Image 1: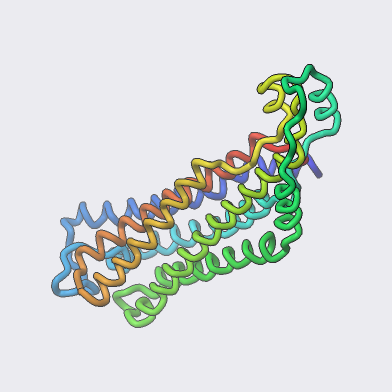
Image 2: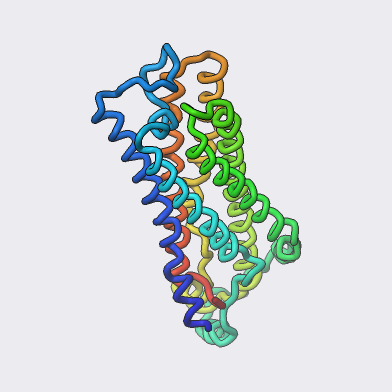
Length: 294
């Protein structure tokens, strides 16, 4: 059973890879069709509009591709999030190492005359975060629910296109965008807090291993299963997307600057692909067995 589970974990990155591939294939097909067709004007476009929205192109003859690729992307996106939250949570398997490794590390010559004292607040902080069911369970569920609402509405957007179901499409669009943004924002905040907890665990449990040199300390100290560059990039993408979505809403619904709004929409959907690329990195890390006890 353990071998089968490790095999599933090893290939977990296939889920976000499928998501990104389907998403980029859809964007490439729609944008390529629009350019190769001579940038035509569609019936769903506004009078002052010259750049087509994603939904304008998707409502035409490529609608089956629009629906299929978006559905595949969203269907694989939600399990990716579930896998991410499950394996990144410190509450599932706290950062740990074998007692044999600790004894062996402490048996080596010490590089310290006396071990540095460990701040008491780290132990208190670890217990507080580790025992918080609201943080460890409710917050990931909230993020997944927001993402599920966004994914469902996005699939419905492709079905109820802007050319034939204008009212329904305009109703589903803000729900889809806001739900996805909230889900991504919660994921980034949760991961930052998990990173803080992992660091507290490592310091409280392994801060006492002061034997040997720096290499020995790093060798017997478990690594944190969170990619810091990936977390930083995801956070930057989410912050930028919040600003772009706000500008998109102002330009399309108040200022009626539809060309500028269309450009912003294409930028936002491409940045979302970048966000999902970071999830590939996050799940790829799981295959490296960066922390023990799995």
